Length: 539
Image (tube, rainbow, N blue to C red; front, side, top):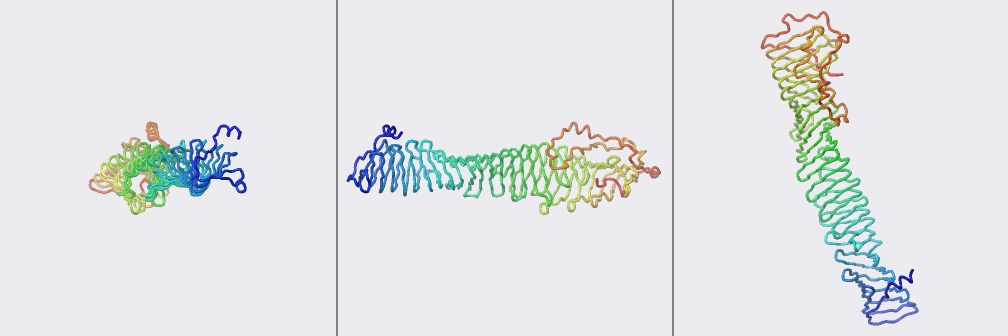
């Protein structure tokens, strides 16, 4: 094989030198050239102070201010070179500096395979181009591809970013970095940090595609996903698969299957099993919608949820078609067929509003605007309360007072302390005030235009069992976190929600009951105050 290579490879030629001699004792079989030595071998030239050439092996050693050139593209300087003419291998040592049209490479030991057009340094090298500086313990540079492969303690840095990695590929012409191991990229201006174990980063466009165990740490958000596209210049990110966006200031998390984040606009859009999780006191609120949009500065976040919206908290849950949460004002609004379940009650209306104290994060008040309706299931039927509007007041997250305003109607299943059914009452009035304690109704007070009837169970008219607009939606209630991802078939639920007859054999009506002489009617302008009414806490 060596003979074949020798026949195919030309001899190293000494073109000029100040002096040529031999020293068999010190360099047996070698021809020594000194002074201004100039050599050539198949498209490459070399200048040095001393050249020791072994003609039989077609190799040489060059020392002292060695300058090596390959054509007009590569220039290299070093203190010492070993050159093997048969294999065209150049081994350079001490203060090695190589330059081509794209890079400057600096190291103490460099191997240059001219046949493969490949450079390799085994210990500590630096590559500098017009965009970046790259440092690593080991590295290989493929000249024809302008591709650099670095291993072990790799650093790529420029005026904007610092990249550290264990393994990567770097294309000097395009500035593209292929990441093949645990790596970090830190923005020098705002300290944004990227972590990934596989992907690519274009150091000229500042666009990254991150594909394995990837996270981006912004000042107040951490984003992660199976795949992340990040444009640092536009501060835009798109994420796919197992997405998690953590708001470190507001102690909230967003999850889903696809997301877009516009950092300059303080905007996050997320879909595909999207859920927003926020800490409320010692509990967590989970909000799901087909689409979630979060906008605003850290202290002024606004959450919008669209289509199949459900939320769950241990003491409260709800559902609507769209939801709006304003962090600064503490106002939460439920739109389009909304329903709220709290303290054993089902609350509905055209629009439901919940106000939270932003400082204490405790519920402050409740508003149901238009067609307000409250239902609580009883073993004998349904306690019901309806009006144009409802206003509620919370203390320590417990609903303490409730005001029903306009065309008020009530159906209550009245029980004693032993929970024995005494009677069923129906009332109408202009306004109702309710006092609650320990999540139990204590008093119901009817004000103005009060009319009512009270019946024993066996005499209660079927047509009065439900108030107009009654709709029991218990099958829709999320009872655990996973339930918020169930998209209900509304046509089926509406059919199932109609009230069903309950057998009287399971009840204990008071047979000796007698209706009051007034036939349940109260003179206009008077108040009717009832204790031990329905709307007890559901067990």
